[in-house]
Image (cartoon, rainbow, N blue to C red; front, side, top):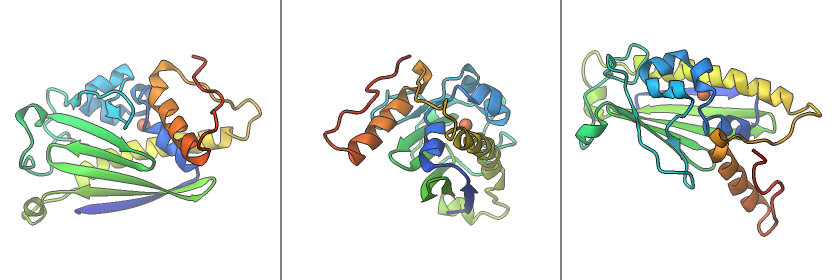
Length: 205
Ligand SMILES: [Fe+2]
């Protein structure tokens, strides 16, 4: 592990986790990461969940060589990465509370820990090859800065969603972009209330 950052966010852990299950907010909320992964400007990200569709990775922009704020890699490509993934981002959600990003030169692990109904601790770790970490001049900061700026944008939005949950108008609704969120809610429901039919069973969208 080359770097660890802990965030304390005033939102329920499920609101935060659901944020990472969809990407229609990406074009307007995440200009920095859309520069690196231009396909995210479509509103369809490529993070997959355990019951969601298997998705392709996201290709770097033409002038980008690394998943970082500057668009440069922090280290050499990890051993074993196939040629087709040398300029590709892959993201996977491990339910219920882990998000992994697979980058050609490192792995980023984000873990969501509930602290209170309206508070969550997020532990973010950047994993690099030991040889990269021991290389003179190595720093994970440029790579971490891209996730940091993106995560702070997400966390601010999630705190607003948390505030909205107290509104009498707050209700469950899913667009087709949010199928992973629906899968996640069903997954959580089935573990909290085994054998009980969830309402609504499907999205009205
Ligand atoms: Fe986001």
